[in-house]
Length: 193
Figure 1 (cartoon, rainbow, N blue to C red):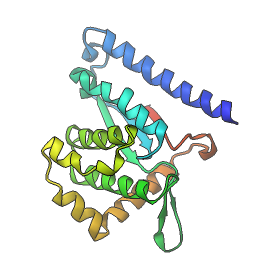
Figure 2: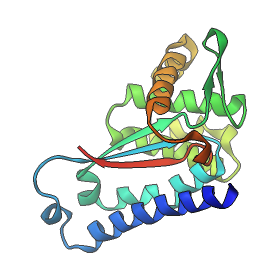
Figure 3: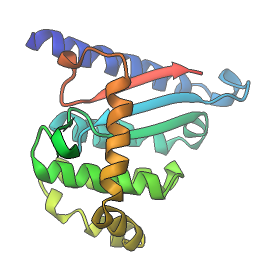
Figure 4: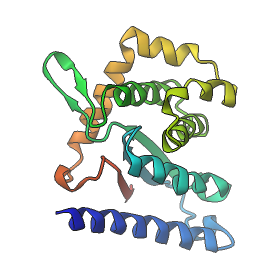
């Protein structure tokens, strides 16, 4: 089972990088993809999963280095992964309650800042800190990026964040993918719609 999981991860990475290399090696991504629809890229992840943080830091961030490439993508971040909704709508996360807090903070940011150019740097900052084993310093991302923390923290403290996280969870669990094959919930879903 372990090697199947590894081969599944490798398959997703190969698919992702093939897509990335083809578009970024061409002088113009828009010449390849010019009919107006964006390519949907959904990334399901967990804030403290080592595979997720590594993917964010080492690969996903590279999309934003190519403005033309990112302009043809509809990137959706889904910070939920293998969390579970239990009795009384309690959320349990694979890597503990601190991961639930960070997933909810990122869900609030995504909800408050619908523009991926604003939400991605914030999520990237949190994931980079987690990758460096400095996740408890996550609040420094607001200052580092010049973002007002109040709306995100209000969302978290009011309970709205829990609601947003549960909606992401329903989206995640409705995706037709055998859950046992997921490594920490990192799943890249590429589809053209």
